[in-house]
Image 1 (cartoon, rainbow, N blue to C red):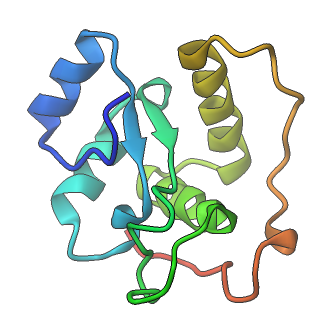
Image 2 (image 1 turned 180 degrees about the horizontal axis):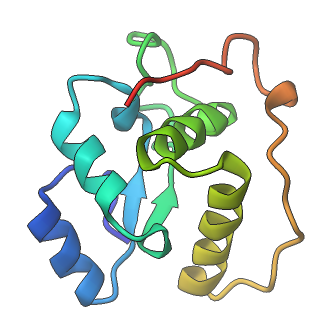
Length: 127
């Protein structure tokens, strides 16, 4: 896994060809991260994993605050929006990617329920 990937499409494709997955964190929620946003949107969903890098990599609008895993739904929604994917479908694929990469036992079917996320974590992001 390439932690906190923020490279070019060419680099992303090279890492993916070598068998690496790309870590997607709060950086993509920032509009100024245009290169990363475009690159991650162009990669196959099978190449991506969500990560928090908590307490670092705060999300847009949360600069100066501690990042935490509870904000992953925001990263998921942003990534889904950038890619034109349904968040539930993308969540299932990212779950499968984690199982595959880390050789985990199959995880239970997940649904995206951001109602349990901290207040203010259901933000919308524009691509």
